[in-house]
Image (cartoon, rainbow, N blue to C red; front, side, top):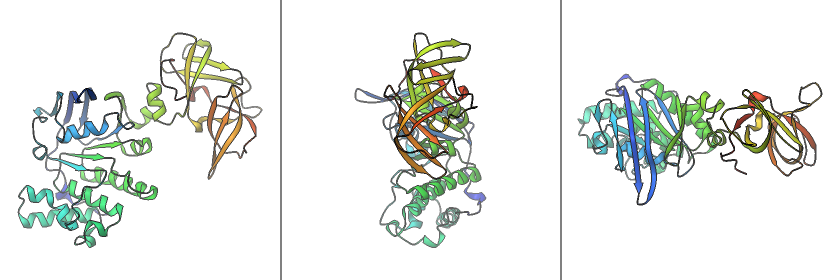
Length: 371
């Protein structure tokens, strides 16, 4: 897809900020959203990131008006909108399962929102044509959804969302049903459309790579609350706790004894393992958690400055990843370590790996280790 920008498809009116203030949603005794506070600036691409059950889809459905609030309020600039029905909010929605009408043509699916808004037929045809051109589906306008591929059906869903010129586009895991190659292609196109049309987008995903690639800011949710909000770089390099770290690729979350502490550095060690790390969360006591990405480990050699720090592991599993191999090994105490190395190793090898102190993040012992 590389269609040109059609000016008339741009949102009909913008806004400065959308605010969720103390938003709570309960399902019986279960609390899906708990006093959620979030401000989304006009023109932003926000990713709501977290595992199943964290509240991200519930938050999206509350924004869309598909779920009433149990508490709190939602504001579009100075106008409260959580009391409005979905059709009066002016938002576009793209669902995980596309939610297309199977008996309607592509053209009629895209124009459905305009039809219920009673847009004149001539204007409706022009706007649908423009939206189909943007998503490069003009030649498929008269087909039924069942005659299209998954990627084409998702583009129909996106065209249907943008044709109404929405203030906000809400996307609920729109790529999860696509294969890996198509996910990458559609990811690029979603970002291109967001930028070229001047959209404001809220995007739900459990995939940290999608969030990092697409978002201006990432909102990490846990138990219906916000754990961290920041740019992709901020959340990637400086997670506020072990929950966020684990979700952002810090696969090694190791609860270890603390042998020394000075300034923002701490040394953690046990037999066969010694790590110097950078303290990211204040703690007291004799133990802490070291968070390390697999790709931040290096194979230790003489002259690396790794004689003091390092982890000795026996390689158990090796996966080929092109220029790198993914390695799972165990220390002498039975602790599992995950690495990505440029060097070739084999199951049964004993190797020494290390990570620079600035790549080893140290958190208090109360966090999740996944062990």
